[in-house]
Image (tube, rainbow, N blue to C red; front, side, top):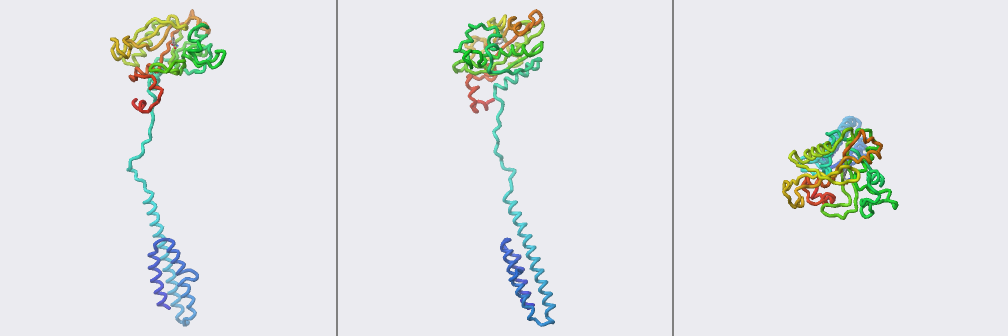
Length: 341
Ligand code: PHE
């Protein structure tokens, strides 16, 4: 009996310590310690032993049981540690591997220029205003001293949204002059960038939607000299101190006198080339002293206050700034183009 117990101990402990996984270990536990297990079977035979043998055999049996149980526990711990190590190895992240780079966009070149222009004007004490693209004809034309018969009011030139021509897509940012004068206390120094719409065919320099920046100053004693000095300074800040500008007389219904400002061609330095169409100059904006009728329409006393205003095309400024040859590139949003800036 003793010998059988010792054999059982040897065989079972070595089997347990070599169990390949936890299922095999559990099978061994049942095989040796289960209700019908081998150790249990042996113990049941104790009754056949002589009285004086029983204590010693009983002691040995308990010892064997304890050793088998210890073996199972230590094997279980070893197996679960091995599983943990295997999982850790399988789930390791190699932080030295090159990552997948997320494509990060950047500001559109036209908005880069817009931000530069805003910064220049903010530095001069102007505020930035925003206004509606769907506008009343009153604001787009009438309050801007534009006659009923003015060609810009034609249905062939302007996108109207109502049959009675009272609502339209603004053709210029100039309605913001009126909106500012109606809503702001004097003096006013404002810049209002935004989209405008005209029924133009698309080509290298035209699009039915484009961007303008309106600007206006209303204060006491404001003159044409302020207009010229301010706009010349803005162009020098934007394009460099050696930028040369000139002002030509022009006509707008809502300014008097009116002018256009040109910047000397950067390509030929004023000699004339294909970029400036042989002119030596590139037209940048329309401007003028705000017409007394417009001021009066907004309830401003023209004996005390005067003002100047301008409107410039943002696409054109961006094209000049980044040497872009075709307006359509600005709107197509082809990343191969946009990535260059
Ligand atoms: N709104 C005019 C245009 O679109 C430009 C302009 C603005 C002229 C302000 C004078 C004063 O051509």
